[in-house]
Amino acid sequence: MGQIPCSNVVQLYRAEYGAEYSSKFCGADPDFMAPVQLPLRLNHPTLIICLASFLLFFFHITSHHPTQSQSTMGFLFSKEESTPAEMVQIVPENIAEKPQNRVLVIGGAYAGLSAVIHLLELANGGEHRPTSVPLPPVTGKPLRSSVQITMIDERDGFYHTIGSPLALADDEYAEKAWRKYADVKAIQHPSIRVVQGSVTNLNCSSKTATITYSTGHTSIVEYDYAICCSGLRREHPSVPQSIFREKYLEECKSHISDIRSVSESIVIVGGGAVGVEMSAELKLCFPDKSVKLIHSHDHVLSGEPLPDKFKDVALGLLHEQGVETILGERVVSSNPDSPTDTGFTVRLKSGKTLRAGKVIWAISRPVPTSTYAPAAALDHEGFIAVTPQLRFPSTVPNAEYHFAAGDIMAWSGIKRCGAAMYFAQIAIANMHQLMLQAEGDTDTKLVDAPSVEPMIALAVGKKAATFYADNVAAGEEQLKASFGEDLGLTVVWKYLKLGEAFEMPKEKEVEGKESSTEAT
Image (cartoon, rainbow, N blue to C red; front, side, top):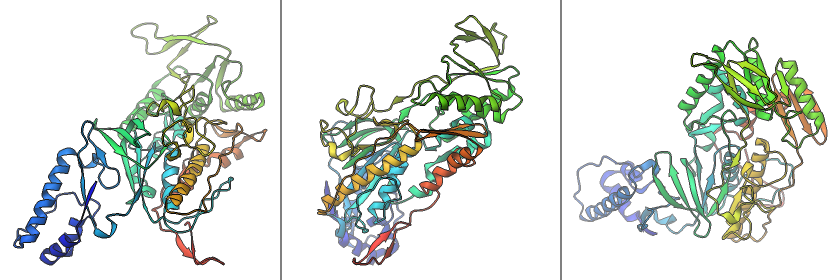
């Protein structure tokens, strides 16, 4: 990529028109490619030549990038699908040769946001946030090479998946559970770009990714490091199927309106974690409705590696909440009895039937969203088979520059949002060590992620059941400790500091060292 120092151009431009116009021309404004109203006083021959060159460059770029919001100029250079065009970037002379760390974060949920925020802190000289695993030492100084982060997500905002059962039962909570990325203060930073779209191919050999934007536009982008945090593909009612907040709210309101209007029982089919939590939240929000949970096994949560004692406790909490349960019965059909029937007749394998005003199926199995990754990186179930350092397996080209965290990776334990944020922090700590190595730091070390035993916190109406270190507990205290007052939304928001604008770590004196930094 050719680079043209623009210091001389800017000096002429500043002399002719002032600092305000020159700062926009040179790119001090992050949107410097936007049209600028120029005074029509071109009376300097050299300036005319320079501006003509700039206009040729501008029209060359815009002809290949019809929508500015879809372009990846600056740190993530876009290529056309067929024959990539040589791009010329006008940059200030003092940074023309400065290398960058272009980081691609695929997915913007718990692991993705954790990766972005932890990397931003470390790259700017911050310390590691407290964690149970000793992480590599940091220099306390910003990286010499700039870090530019692009986070790609199908949705236009962060959705609190843990809160789905309540979001589909309470209008006010639904409003809070989805925050547009533009409203998340922690990622409003010049080093971060958020793109709504999906990665359809990750070419580890060339370090390029094919991105399909929400508009349908497709481009190929380059990166230096990548971390896959796209998680699992979940069906309704585990998560809403909309990718835009406005459509999501319509989806929730329609679902809640149906619940309000039914006069017969609400039947939830499937006694996994989603079915248990959803039936409990529906009964909590609509105490006058009859809510029935049907499960084909003798225990709820039959698919989870949990002790029977915990499953029995969860069942007891459901009954306390007022939910009726039918266990050991499989639903074979649910249909209206006639074209004018507004309800459903639910038929069980045993031959029994029951009436329902609404039937909610909570039996879908989530699948990894890893179709974009090379086959050599996946296990037999489609999860990314990471190494202990959370990198791609060595059979993948450039494996050391590719990481994964969260539900998409093959690892021990139950898939949980806390684990997703935790493993993203470990992966980013190792990625940061590689960046330090590239800058000549020889005192670097990668850490291994620990294995995780099965553990869970399950919200069941006004109480919660927990299983940790072979201990089972349940009650209102467990609900408050694990989920707070809003099914963990505030817990996540505060832990990642999503509502706080990023601040540079403050310098502090350290005994035996010149200085270091402490994360705010």
